[in-house]
Image (spheres, rainbow over the protein chains, first blue to last red):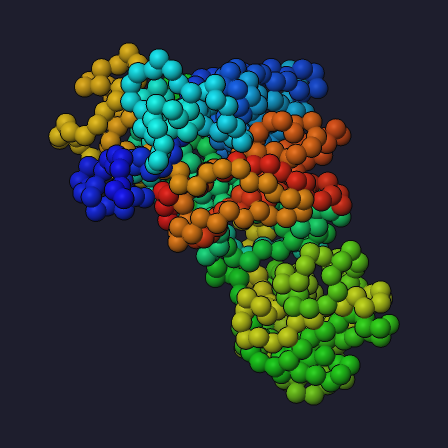
Length: 306
Length: 323
């Protein structure tokens, strides 16, 4: 049976011979389709709690991405300092994870349901306004198959996935729809970097809770803060998305220590990745020398224009 | 690092288990209410005589022994000799340092992990000996100190530093360490010399004159191409696997939440802290990939808590993250 559909190569590629993973687009695959984007703010009460809802009305929980906007400055439990400067108008991905450059990042909760994207601050700073940017995709974050979601009286370009009818598929099923902005990354600007930290362990004699940290800075040259995705692996291991955080292995015995954090932020000049580890003597933490390799994808999205 | 040195075991006679009289095995703790004593030896220790090192630490590899919420209680001594000989026989009669440390370590998590045994005071006493010379061998003894029945740990000689106990000595270092930053400049986008390809403008913009940021799609840049996507249940206390068989690590995204609790109808983007009980206990939800599978799991942050069940939705893209 013939292979039907559309394949779009990048400049300089022969789309007939290039591998699917290297081309710009193929109708064989689904893409992330930006349904809605914008900004939202949360003002907390005297207990540091507050939330905001962004309506989407899709009828299902959609995928999303949230960025927090703020000032980046290095923060550390041990009063360490790898950079004494502050960077205004910085953007921090994935609220809800620890980030060593801005307070209360792990005190955020961002979630979608069938009507809203909600951004919540829980036990954060009291009576404080927190600013966010968001992307809501026309793509699922849950099982869903509602017939009423078919597009009708529509125009533009609709590209179905293999074996499907472009006139019948719902928006979240389409490989592409010109109704939505495609999330595309800049292959030239994307890249890889590494960070290395030496062995560390807590000592009753010298320091029961030592810390080590370093960062890598990518000067992107775009003149605006870009949407980016990043992953890392340690040695030859599996790849995790950044941000990443790890607690002491003895957490179930009450040792609630954050002992490893890999985080990131960006502004109009740079993307910065930092790598921090701690070792606590009383919970037997120790670390060998470790090198992490980071892969970052820089997308065609200006966060300051949300 | 120049101020940090690792020393590994070089053979069976660098380890000894006293009770059965066995080389190649270091075992200490309790077996059936009988105290067990172990020994480790490191050769070629290039620390000058009279040096007072900042820190000496044995990273003990938990190859076997007890696993659970109980403490291994032990006392560590140095073998107070200039150049302690190999452990071809029982070294119990060798003199011990005045310095010793009685400690305990909880025997969890599971085997195949490590715990640290600080031996700074013991090592410095040996380095201070008039007869010590750089390149000599240093030994340590581990006595049980009241561990409960059958709480013990052991390591055997493998000849592989990743699964052997090793000694690390810091001579000069700040406990808090911040290496210099790494700096990378992204390449500049190539100049656009030809106007071909596909450009789809956002509403209100002219596709011919729009900048890249004003386009809904351009054939000049790749989209993330999702080959595998769908729902995945993650049972309690498990890590779910989604086979993708790409043969490399593709980009991925995961959304989902725990199946019960105040946010059970809400979907979070992973990684994320998810509060899932009325008293706001937390689980940290994460995912990772290797060349064949996407893995989805979570860690409970409550004391004694289990990893809660989750409903998730994943995307595995064929775009290679080259890791």
